[in-house]
Amino acid sequence: MLPDTKTKERIILPLKAEWRSEWKLWDGILPNIKTEGKSNQEVGGKITPGLHEQGIEITAYHLRDAYAVRGSVLGIDPAIVARWMGHKLNIHFDKYHKYISKRDFEEAWKRATKQR
Image (cartoon, rainbow, N blue to C red):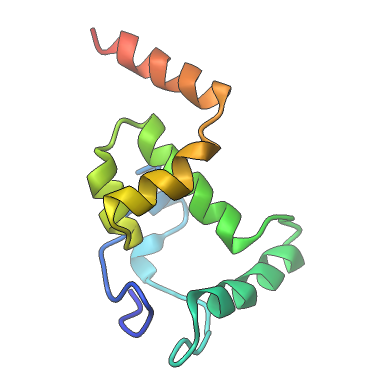
């Protein structure tokens, strides 16, 4: 948790839960990126080259977009996901729901019909 960013310190949980153990997230090892006085965009700009060095051709913002959609598909209350991401609910809907794809709708439908 980084207390000096725009959205302040907050709880952020992995989606999917098994990623906690797969990636040993309890170690809490964060990239050594100075965030004080920097915008979230500047911080994201520091993370993206590291992803590219690992052969992962996405940006930090793609990860954020995917997190928001994954929360919806998993059936987590949007107010909770928005809070984890440091957003108000209306911002969350305006920004991220446009990324929900047909595949995401189908996955959500499968989950919903399995629970019955």
